[in-house]
Length: 136
Image (cartoon, rainbow, N blue to C red; front, side):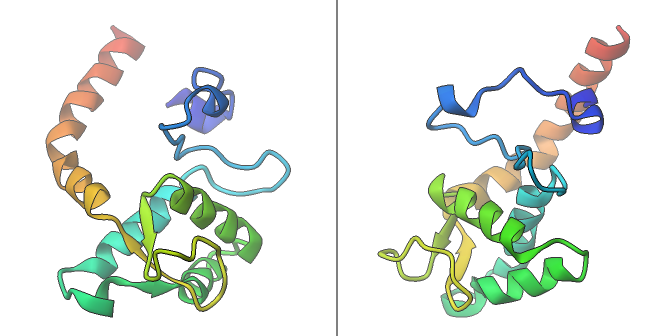
């Protein structure tokens, strides 16, 4: 938790772990929030809702507009979505197109949707572990 607040995070190296994504990582040369990738994932989970078809997909342009209202630059949003696409946490509508462009449609992947359903069961255990570690 201190790493998120203070920005001093050196316990995880993305270069050493090609199959694990650090969703809290942000580019050091831009001002952004470490919760941007998680916010994109949550936005896509909320959009999925269970409609099926195109109902669960959002265009990159719509995602940019959503975060533009919060003052986050388009290039930073594009970077976050590209990272999520690279690690297959989100999927493009056209599986052969992995680039980030305004009309590109993306949705949450099925595996990420399953993990997010387990989150309420995991959260109390993680919270108690963090509390014991910090204050125990």
